[in-house]
Image (cartoon, rainbow, N blue to C red; front, side, top):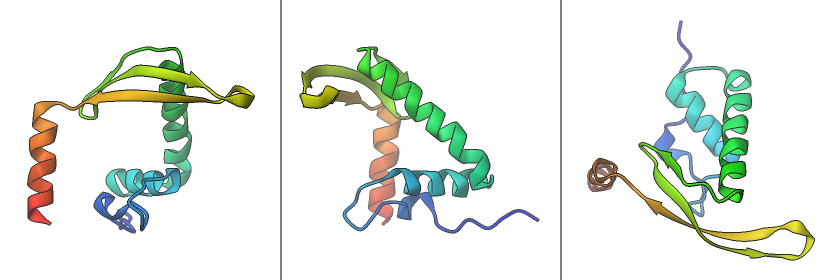
Length: 104
């Protein structure tokens, strides 16, 4: 018997509209009907790979998310940095997002 999702991905954001890692994990669990213990390592590994690629200045092209590229980087004290990214979304993703917001 398949597991019932706790929440839909549309409700995964926190009250202030921020999508944090726990909410992301819950949304992936809801979409895939996999167990959280199976989803968590894969999502964390994907986030680590994305973070490393962006820190190295690579262009990241991930449909349906879109194409991410580093615009500028400002180093901070303690080894941290502020990285400004540009995200170009695919045309069909923008249309789908607008349709979803119209339905709400």
